[in-house]
Length: 167
Length: 273
Image 1 (cartoon, each protein chain N blue to C red):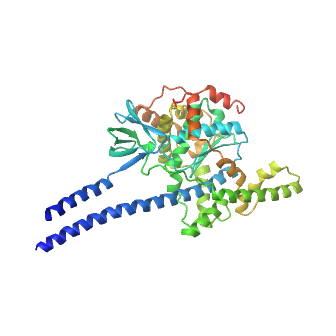
Image 2: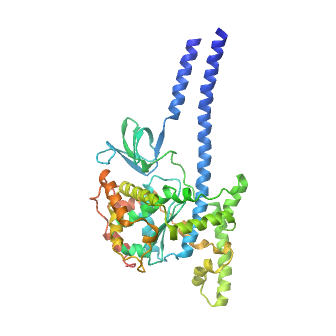
């Protein structure tokens, strides 16, 4: 009985120790694994999400194993959390902001017309002319910025067309 | 005695089991914390982005904006941070500068674009700004206050996103962040770290990583105090930065013989020159 307990305890200890060892994930679209920490000889390409079991590391590079290969990966291409969905400020907040922006736009245009301004000029001056913090918020510009979406596939295509990298 | 030994064994097993369970619940807690931190960063960053576009209007040029987004988002794809969306905008200003706000907001001035010669330079400058975001420089130096908790926090966050509720504490930190961006500048070490990140990001993307150095060397020749400069106020000496980047490139055998993508750059920005 004592022997069995000891074996189980040792096994559990090893398992729990393994859980503590440092694991990182490739969080770039993909990342090169190199034979030394200088990017001279590439062993393989790791795809986003690949798990890396860290052996050692310096400021810029990680020596890690992935599958049956071990090599050096740039630390900047990794994360300690497995890559998941993106967080964005849009979504539920977007609808509210859009409604709010529309409501504000119509008010501004009315007020601007009285001052002899066009709709564009009214929009440009909106953020600066108001007194309260609420009126200093340029929703339309922010939404314009935040609505710029380009798929990963299109970005890879863009890089390929420019000769920056192969697909 | 035998019973005592068995008891000790059982206690040992329970301790190991408890240890394992603690690890599991810790990870879940970390996930929740990570999510909350990103949401806080997004809302804080949006307020700072608003300060930037209050100071400089956005350039209204869809073609240029799309091109800058294509370059910036491509570099961001290889920057190792995939939990946020990055947004790139051009500011209608003749000054030579670029800004980053937490949560993925990157701005570059028209003046900076006009001083560039190729796409690898644009990629290098945008990568430097992505470096400030990914290394969380503003978030570390000026952490936004935790305002509320739970459901109240969620509702408040929506209101903050709309700009309808901005507490005085949060407003104060946003003001300090704007001061950092426009007047004081980042810590020198943060600038060096952003440069280092930029070299690695552009290299992973496939750009010639000399782009950033080439651009810095060119603007070094722009006279301080002329109408087109502000970089001197908010960045460490360019000579220092260039020297450190050169060392980094050499020590890490970064590929600097790749093409610099000139023809597409000139075509996309021809109306800006």
